[in-house]
Length: 239
Length: 281
Image (cartoon, rainbow over all chains, first blue to last red):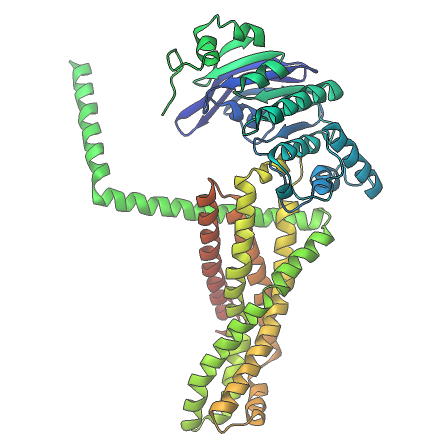
């Protein structure tokens, strides 16, 4: 078991964003977390990777690193691509003595190759397109060989072709790293092309759990409303 | 019956509460309470990060490349503005004081007064103000931008200690470079004072410097250096803390920068007062 969430609760002020949710993600499995904007999807990721502390509940993860790919890449804009990717290996107390400069260069090259990029080591994030930035952030995330990878809306803001490319890399990274992955998204193509299972959040609770195919069959009012992007249904948007 | 009374009581209390919340008195007191809460919250964060900085300073490896980069930014790039401000302040003071003192028969004290004023106060406090506006605001806005673009979250997820990576080189650069800036600025200030005195009065350079040496003691130089260390560390720490805890988007970056500048100004004036009481009272 790579990631297990039990009875998780998180409140901001008086707003219960996550209300007693539980789920599991196995190794080499990708779980898509879907739902309307503000339904608590990103909060779930931040709780799992330790950026937020839950009010109650339990998060159990396998030993090893948890990597996160941020919605807007979050590359360090003062560092070039090579330094961004090798950042954890250079700066982390437990890793910095393990690698020499020559090793770091080779690791950066390998990771860039894995996400289909070559020869951009000296470029700065501002010189890259959105899709390239996203792929560099993938390379940075997997540099420590994580056991779990969390993707926060990895295809938002990208054109359809770049989205397809990113989705392919999510699948490829899962196969290469055998990591348990969670993809937060509301893009149908990302759900169908990357996920093995889907959970849908609404009002802080899981209102659907199943495979992408089951979701597309629209057998519950929630999946029907989400798939058809309808304003009519049990889920109400807060304007 | 009891239940009815209870509900009536609750309703009445609710109405009173609603009315009170609209009153000017409530708004004034809640505003003061919010200010106090924000003050204590910021002070707590500065204290905690300050302690974490000292812990990291003695337990972690300092990135020399990053430290040199920050020292260059803190000391070298800010020097022209700092020297201009201290030099001009000395010219303003000398042009107002020298002539008057000569007229009153105290010409032989001009050098002493100017040097004492510059070494004890102007050199350090005016340099501090210049550094706050140039470097403090830049530290705060840089870290605030990193916060709102999730770069600080990325540092944490990659399991790198943000205090070691972001705070240590910046605060250390302040501690190392500020005393140097204060000394250079004081020398420039004394020379600017001498030039102004020579140009606006009959006193020559020699008379100015003959009296100047009598106004400076080793203690003054030592306190000035110590002030540099404390001011530099304080400005860098406050600026980093305000930037680090920024929230929101572009507005959040602006608010964090303003907060860093205001807090740093107040902090170094308070420090200056403490130094004056301890060493010159």
